[in-house]
Image (cartoon, rainbow, N blue to C red; front, side, top):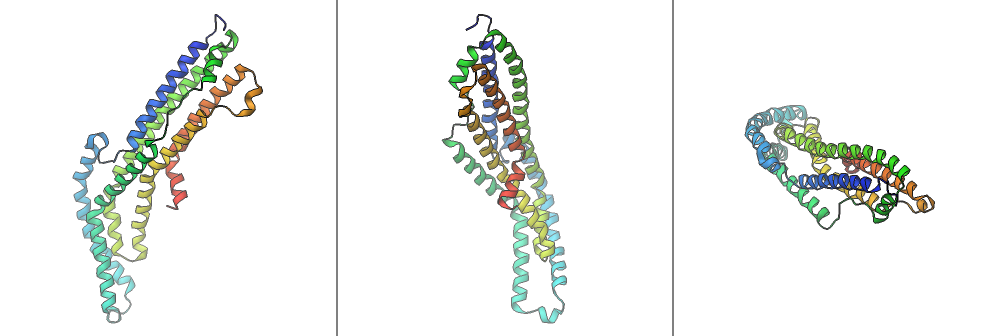
Length: 280
């Protein structure tokens, strides 16, 4: 090894940023497994819980309004429509709408818990930490002064990219909690439309689809991080065996940057991917 080689410094820098990345990934998995009710020790949820009764009261009032709208739009001849089965159908629709308005938060909590349990099962026996292969460690340590100087510049750029990507991951997960918390109170208003006809109740269907896409987004984020980490931990492709060692180190560092940025892209697009995959 060249006495003036910067390989050891480069390797230490890469180990530091990889440890930073793994720390942020562990934090993200912990956050994704949390229910919004326990996020930040339940402080944000308490604010939503205090506001929710106002929306439930408004939603309960809207149930009657949408019921009348639905009844009038479907009834051409009131005498003809006042059969027992028609009255029973209308009352069932009214009862279901009122139940959904009153218990929408309870239903949401059940989905939060189920999603958290699913994420826990996915990550329970899965090694999700990013690591530098021993082969690449040896190559970087043995770099000459000229190659190591070039690699040092590249390593600094890669370190900055990984740090930015790590904070972007955390921001994306925090923003998901924000979306959930903000949309929870609107559930009472959206579900009140189920008392109306099909045209009116489309609002409840749209809300339910959007809610599911945000909740299941956490599962897609988890899978994206696991798969992207597996890409890099698997090492370089076999065709790189004919390249010089410093070229292998260069390709590895580029692949490290590419995999990290790809992870961020997959996480940020998790909601859209989930919606398309499940037709939500």
